[in-house]
Length: 83
Image (cartoon, rainbow, N blue to C red; front, side):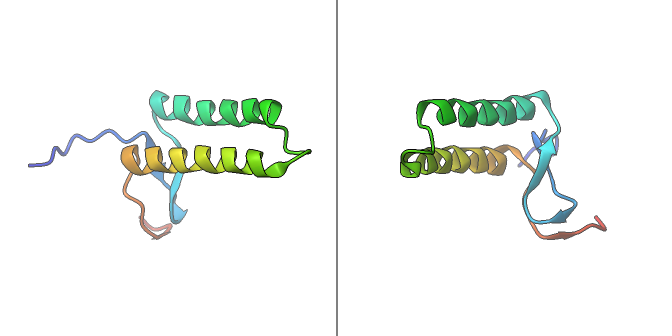
């Protein structure tokens, strides 16, 4: 029997599909960590000489962020703003 006391880290967007800003401190840590790792990657793998490595790095980080949002966020569905 699933627990009804689920605590989401990310709320669903009011309009459209996906997640909005974090609603818990854990979600904020994940988002700030993502931003920090993107900035770190811009220094370590500068996009100017060869953007392929940087884009692959950003792709991996984005997939990880989406996986965490899927795991710890409200279930995604299309929303029209009335919910």
